[in-house]
Image 1 (cartoon, rainbow, N blue to C red):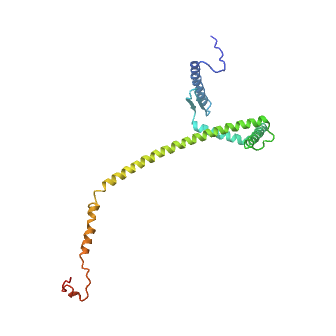
Image 2 (tube, helix red, strand yellow):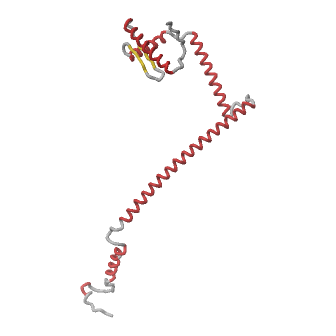
Image 3 (cartoon, rainbow, N blue to C red):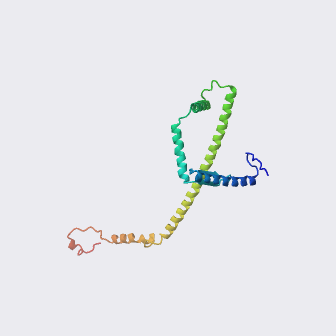
Length: 222
């Protein structure tokens, strides 16, 4: 039976596509192994399946082979400067970028209200609509920031209120607990100065002239 020629396009059926991938992957890995053994070549093969699964083969070390490849490409670029065609393409891309930058700078100046002389009515209307949309977006963002700040301040207020209540409760417990000490109430402590005043009042205040020893011998005179 003659085998039909496979068309080089994506297989639509998922099951057939997976079966074909498995068969051809194994064949490719086998060919890479045969090439490395028969020809003494350094071969590194990396395959990612449609589901992202990695399949690889390296005749020596995958890391060393990749480093060798990177070094070779750098040396090749250094030894082979860009061709005239590549230089022309780079110049064209640079000119296109410069033109685009100039257009952006011109649009920026127009949005700032500068360089509006050459603008037509349609261009001015477009600028006005663009500015109105920008102002609407900015105001919406500003209101969102305000709401976030208000919510943050409310949470901070709740935390401070809870902390204040805790401190008040703690202070109240200390005030009630500290009243029992101190050795008596204010009325009891007030008795001591009154007694001292009464003792001081008993001191003799009568005027007497003479020696101190004759003071007690003098008879009391009315």
